[in-house]
Structures are given as structure tokens and as C-alpha cells.
Image (cartoon, rainbow, N blue to C red; front, top):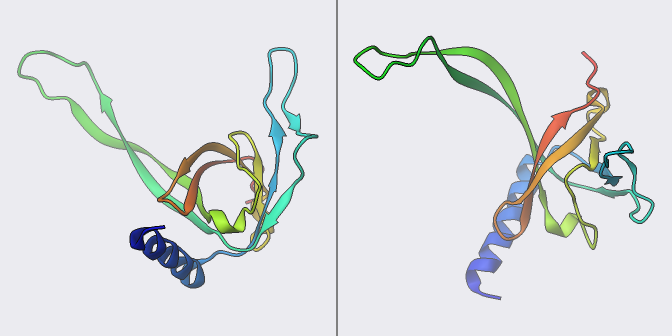
Length: 141
């Protein structure tokens, strides 16, 4: 292990100590096929972790309005919609031997009104963390 790997791991733990948003529970799911719906995965057990960083950023989506012309008319770039970008970042140490997969469900113990989220993408976030993009499934308002 290089000194940079160690420094990155120490930095990840420090970020968790300062910015963590509580514990989480992952519910493994099977992918839906053509003739069936997605359901609980019997080969993987649900598991909990103690720290994660949850982000609920407001995102402005710029859209091109009007006709695109090739000559000297400008296109109209306006922010037509504003939405939220949900993602969670989890240190691999809190996952243990468990694995996060696209389609799994996750809930956060400190935010029970938010219900469950679906993992739409699982990507590395440095060497010691995993970043998961989320889709809100059943959020109470």
C-alpha cells in the first residue's frame, strides 16, 4: 500500500467523521426480466452500515428552445426545469464483504420520511469510497 492510498483512506474516514448523515440499510434486489418484476434477491442478505454522506443538490437543467438554425440566429438557452440530484457516498470499509449493485434499494435510518431509494448507478469515488446515484421511490412530503 502506497502512502497516497493510506492518505486517501485517512481523508475518507475524516470526511465521514465530520459530514456523515447517519446509518443506512441496503435491500438487495434481483433485476427485472422480460416476464417478471424486480424483487428481493434470495442469494444476498440485507445489510446495514453506520456512516454515509448523502447529497441532495438542486440542479438546473438548461434546455435548447426553438429551432436550431445553421446560419446566424442564436439558440435560446434558458433554465426551464430545476430538479434534485440525489447521491450517496459510502466508504468501502462500512460495506464489509457486501456489494452494492444497480437496482438495489437503500434507506436511511435518520430520515425515515424519505422512504427507500433505488441505486441507479454504482461508481468508484476514489479508491476507498463508492458513489451511488439514487432515484427517489416513495418520498413523503
